[in-house]
Length: 269
Image (cartoon, rainbow, N blue to C red; front, side):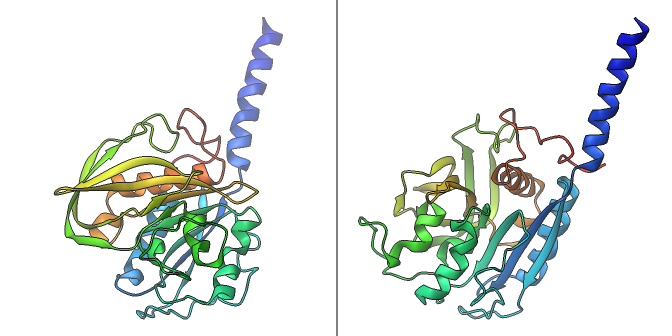
């Protein structure tokens, strides 16, 4: 009995040591560009995520409110070297140079997971984004295929009723439906085959997918995305931060099928 007790104690000690030794996820958070208070939101996201999961968030921010923000990642296809996950929260609607966009995509083509938030969906538009892409694999649909969903615009700022349509996905388990403050409902031109919708949003008579996952490219790189997150009050809402934290863990492969973080990656105490 004493030997068994020692074995149990050793097992518990090893589990605790593993949790303590878990290395923080290295997360790159990219913000900047048109139409949003990114200076505040980059801090809200960094603080909120680091409080929820074992991660170190490095901010790549430019205080440039144009539709062509001068982000330092451009022209540097190895910008994500050493990072576990990249969060794309930039608004770069008029960055349309195919080679620049291919450079932004290179880490994800090679397997670096991603989280895409809000206006990232309307960035890097290398083709006619107003038309549904029926033929894939060309330069025009590069970014949309990475995201898993093509959106061309949004409606007015009004509350959005969010309903989790897949409550069994690890990233949504335990999350409750909610209604946002005034937000923008992004339209859906096309949801690609490798994408999986997790939540829908309804604004008046309009309804669209607002949360989904995608498996990008031959490496099936994990991408978690939500179109919600225009206003600061939404970004700092616990329900939003919980969703993004779950999505980040899922993208990084640190979220179990039961929706619980892997040992050492849960909410900090």
